[in-house]
Length: 252
Length: 254
Image 1: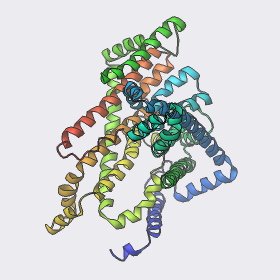
Image 2: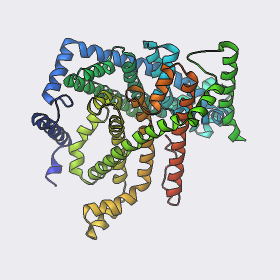
Image 3: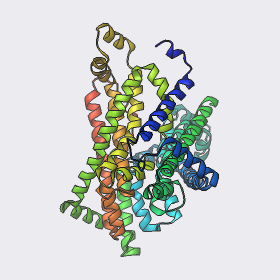
Image 4: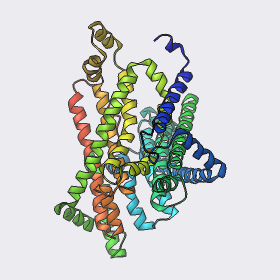
């Protein structure tokens, strides 16, 4: 026990991952699972390399990431602006809280049928759904961030006759930054999920469509390569924002 | 005074939507006024189709939650207990966890075909990770002396998990259950919208495809009601179970 705990963490982590891949290899090599359902690690790696070299996978990756980031940025702007206006006033919060609570409990994907019937199956439908769905986490976090402003700061602002806009800009937003970033991290996850769903339903270019077609054609290596790329997007985006969050919190 | 304020905005939205529709649109294949959506919801509830679809969605949600939650709980306790296991598994967990559950829909459909199997599998995958992480945290926050006492009493690992760890971590686990249940409902409905032809998600898609916007909006309202009701019920249960201990952090809302 004690000797094993002296091994550095990263080495242990890599060893654990290697063990999982070995088991994966043995399961596929032994033929315990049909190749149509589970491709071997080597075949998946091959498919990844081929897709990246030919540029097919890179193009799909780009399309999905652009969709996700565009929708997320738009949603963040809307959410922070709206959240500031709602969060600044106790009255507005009282009026809107139950409505927001109800809207939040709706699965974001449930508005897709409505979006399809209003806009059709185009790229703007997908973008609209991504924006609509990923607005909520950041919006609620911004409202939350404004609700926790130190009451004395409000008093001070009144004494020095700070305008409402100046109060939002100089006191409210800086105070809400940690909440906003945490909300934006959640929003980015939602944006990725909705981008993939939107692609699957509308057939727009991207990883969502790619894995759907790979599964329909029983091309398991391409399917697993696509899933791995989606995992990579999730990993990079959530760690990127986590690092940004830590930096900002430390800077404050 | 404050309570009625929350009702004004939804009422205003409904009234504006109703009047706006009647004045400017009249008839439409993609929109419906709230009154017609309510009538459609009532008749869908009355003829039993909506209740049957609701039961299917809840079955998919609960089945996945039971499997994913139980697996996450077991893995979380094991990892929470063993430093070696924690260090060996963290990289694998951090690499697998960010995979969006919807990425597994085509794979799950390939393996299980249409029906409960594919939906339950994806819900189980989605709920496994929060259950694992939250259980691990709950175990880590247990008073170390409790574990020491268990060791002194000569309890086996399984007994320690059952008699000491679970009761001590119960309030946090209940919060984990509430968060996972919310996720499970969202993933179940999403699976039905994207690929599984059953349940509430499919009901919504069919209403859209057959140009019945009143049913679409009615069902959408119903889905929101179920999500909201489920959250409120679990929150109440949580407070009722653990209020005497005063350990539940009610600020964690989701």
